Image 1 (spheres, helix red, strand yellow):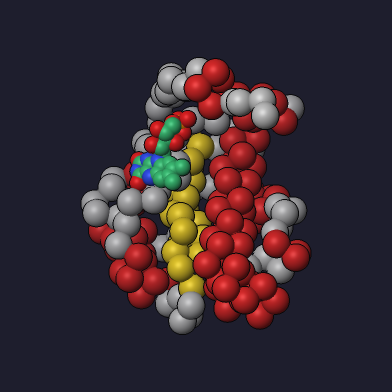
Image 2 (image 1 turned 45 degrees about the vertical axis):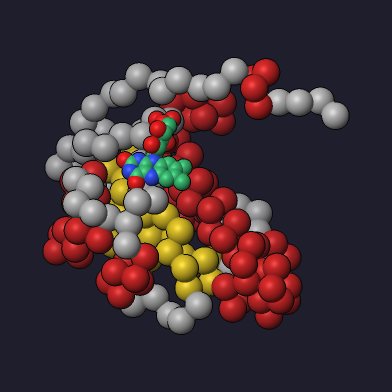
Length: 171
Ligand SMILES: Cc1cc2nc3c(=O)[nH]c(=O)nc-3n(C[C@H](O)[C@H](O)[C@H](O)COP(=O)(O)O)c2cc1C
């Protein structure tokens, strides 16, 4: 799929079929994430691959019962590795770059999934302590996003966008 087609086709999809995401696609998504920019090239994030049904259920529970999580074939949990970035960038790395590294990585995963004909949704509404506990995240790791991924069982319309005028300002 052309890059701009992937941008255009991506939607937040919250219903998935039972079909599993194959291992090759999982690898392609993760390989794509590895290409994302990161502060100082440090890749100050971690990715937890959740595939086990009971763990997906528990993750959904940690996301306040959002059904798109257990409905997916897999979920990727992105955490910011604050210490890794802080080792080079101190406070700025700890508070800011690590979060950005993890955020960009998660965004790449959604675009890669779309390009593979898969669907995903960004889940940011969750109990961070519970998610950390579930994935056994280390100290100074902040969960940034849960990205459930699967074969789409719905085709949502594009959601509205703000006008360019309200967002872009030439200075
Ligand atoms: C930071 C962030 C947090 C979000 N959290 C949730 C969430 O917890 N649950 C959910 O269903 N969608 C969540 N979304 C998805 C948005 O609702 C969605 O991206 C937005 O409505 C635009 O629709 P689109 O993704 O189809 O373009 C989140 C998106 C972002 C970027």
